[in-house]
Length: 159
Image (cartoon, rainbow, N blue to C red; front, side, top):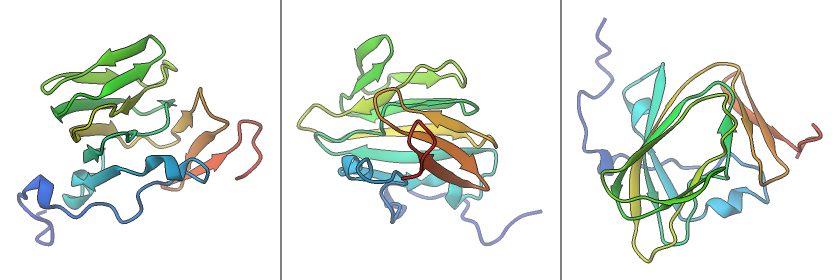
């Protein structure tokens, strides 16, 4: 059945950015200043995977360094030269490069824009139920419950 309320095609850069820049609790949410996400998958009603067009201003981070238990992730660099930080160290990325992060392997990852130019990339992730996130560098853990992320300290106490 065709959903006539959904667009057929759009110019990705013209899609309105998310109103709330981060789901993280403080003090982590403020670290996401300079990150802007345009939820392209949501716009088309995609249920099995999400797609974001993400912009990182100079000095901005994509996320806290994290790993998912259930969700695979993939990124494709469109513009700029971010640094990919993983358990293996740092990797300089450039337009046309991509990286994937298999669920459950525990390899924490994040992008950081250490340049004076904007970084733009596509991020794709599945929408696995019962996902959880680990954050090797921060006192944070996340559980995906009823369609929302719930964040606690690593000892389970709430923020």
